[in-house]
Length: 182
Image (tube, rainbow, N blue to C red; front, side, top):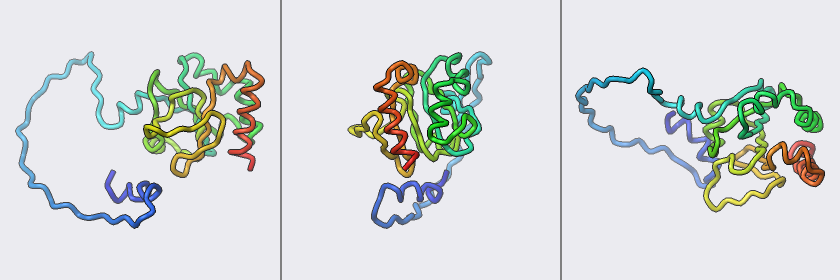
């Protein structure tokens, strides 16, 4: 990605005018080629392959709603058919086909900018703590809508805790109303 491609992203954070200044061209010196043997049992990560190993994106994502989870594979695979989650989506006028389900590796916090390279991001709802990579010192309260750049964000407890707690359901509903049903 070039600096020109990143300019609109940087403009979201700066109120001053931004200019691209060409850098002096570095002197190219050919590096000696080194032959390396690759063990076939070793995974080799190149570029964004390592990033995509940290999270799994499923769903059609027709409306750009991204749901973040950190669940075991079996529980994550059942999410599109989860009755409680389907009711939540229907309440905000979405269907399971309208969203992207993203399962993050354990202890991995995703950067929304990196995520937007993989899928369309219009809104984000994170079911669990520590799922989003935030700037140190940033405080976002659970169930209170916020934004990262231009993307509305709602942080919530894990889905299984909300499903079994009336107070958490009410807090989630208030947050979803503020975010989706303005």
